[in-house]
Length: 270
Image 1 (cartoon, rainbow, N blue to C red):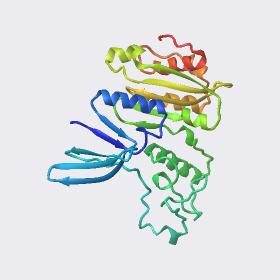
Image 2: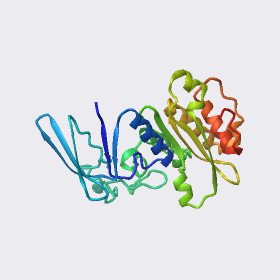
Image 3: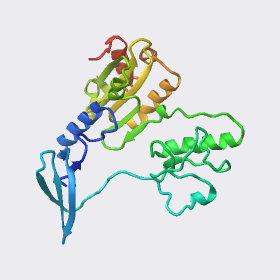
Image 4: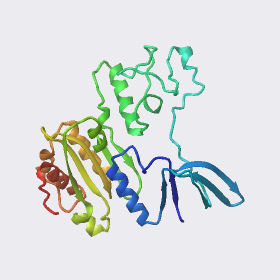
């Protein structure tokens, strides 16, 4: 089927590193998809078996797209309707989120809240960690969650995954950093399997070499991102990762190569 994507922002996956957005757009265009970024949907109408979408571009011009189906994805909101949270003494924000402190405790001391109804990314694995945290707090332990190390994944093919800071965030925060990338087309396992689209990019502090962000697009990236999370949890440097032995041939070698590139532009296979 011919697929057309209408996006209000100036790029797809706008919450992730811009390099990932650019690469995913290129790959999906190669697969035949069409993209209309910086377009605002004006209407969606069905007449018989035809769906008509009208959208306005940045110049104020109206475009018309016709198709068999229209999949609408306009964000998410907490589903707290009908909870009567206020009657239990639980404060709810104007956006419908339940207010919690750093221990996920609500304004009612005996009530805790986790997951999509509280602040932060609406991700199943984030909610899982919060559930464990609350259970451990109730057991009088002292757990913690580093929300900067909650990975995000886009389950397209190739997959997209990231953890930590993006280049855009580091620039906005005035953080001096260095970047190293390694393309999947230079990776033996990717070439053998025919999945050569994508890359791994590592961002590290310019002075300490601590890894600040890892961004990847390619085959099996939803699994590969766990290595980056592990390394960052232990505050590893790019050089630490680059000196780890990675089995050959594997997709994970791309992480080692990107770390070598970030360390001192020392990637072995480019």
